[in-house]
Length: 551
Image (cartoon, rainbow, N blue to C red; front, side, top):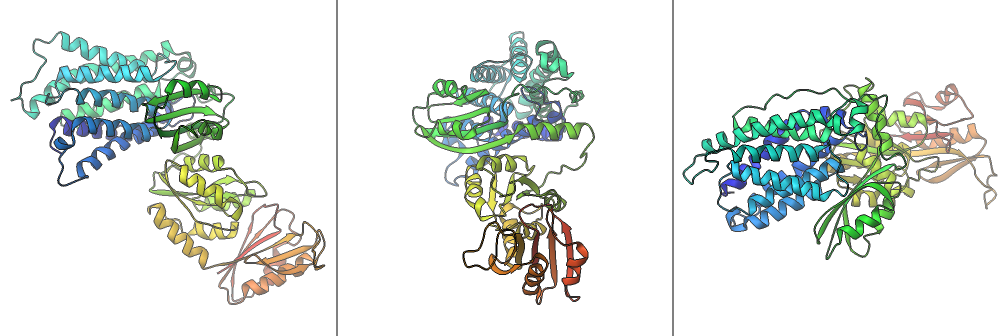
């Protein structure tokens, strides 16, 4: 990578990202507009990471082709697309447009040093690009902060006797010149953030500043620190919102839905109008070949279906805003403090029964309630995948009925997702034991699959209908080992028969009692051979009296 402007652009973005990651949770906790879902910091961080990853990819794409040979126009197009595809939520999409505008200005001025004039032009174009991407821009948000910072730099440049740098200017000269105007812009940005409460009633009512606007100043503090050779510039901290009255503009819509569309002749305005019939907070940004869509809706499938004939949908991310608001409230009121840890990968399991949900969570696995029949939709799974804090996720469907929806969710998700085809809750719990958050999803999926292969499963349930072969009647017990019917009749005897088959040569037997199981724990213990270790839990599932596994 030899183009000095591109090199400097990357270094400054990295400094902004580092500062933002340090205050990521603080930015999340300020988030009340347009929805108090507590993810603005996350969304801005992910957008910056996508841009940096694309710059690195370009730098390492070929040993025979330098950045100069690739050309600024191709670089800017790639960076803009990466920001667009990596963006999530309102804040991420708007930040992607700020980056796009700044990058396009860099591309239009080949050979120029990054001096006050170029910075002023880049930030001005960035603010214009961001405003133009929002159909109904709200003042007091990140848009206002970006515009007022751009105006301040333009004013500083206008009053300079010599705002340009010559070809002989050193890197140190560039740093000093850039730091001067960015310091001024940051001062204005901080004032703009504080004034947001006067411009936006939702911020005033919640007693908070805008999360996106504050996040932008955090980024610029990191950039200023890098220019001065410091770690970052200290900014004033802001108290989180009053969570007793969180603002939620989308009172009738559940899912924050984001996806990309690639095609030809894509018409932003046409699709924006159609999407507004399905929800609110609609953003459609990009160009004729690539669009990024954001909206709040109850029907993500209908939103993606609008593009069925126009192009290919990808990078789909669906978040359950009601759960996000609840989690944010719990965090800010003291519940779950210290629980959220950034990990390389996590897992989500489809479950039923209060006790089974608890067993999965105790193993560090998030759960999605699949109901008695374990049958969530693709979009329920996408929302559960989004809720996992890690960017790589393993899905445990725990029923063959869920395999197709889980595979589709993995295909559509913006995250790296692996599906371990667990056919039962017992198998899912065995897999969950093998989860190691420091490993990637692929490694965890391999370890989980091996754990499932090492066990046999069984169950005893109430028969839902008479047997065509006359072996049992409705309401009697039926027992299974690895999906094979092996026993039937009276519940206790059926349980004994299944355990007898399942437990031979087993070192560990797990029994999970369900709702209204017709035998107590003492009886279950009496059936297990003394050489085998028994783990007995209350699962609360309604479909099986007992779920069993042996290893």
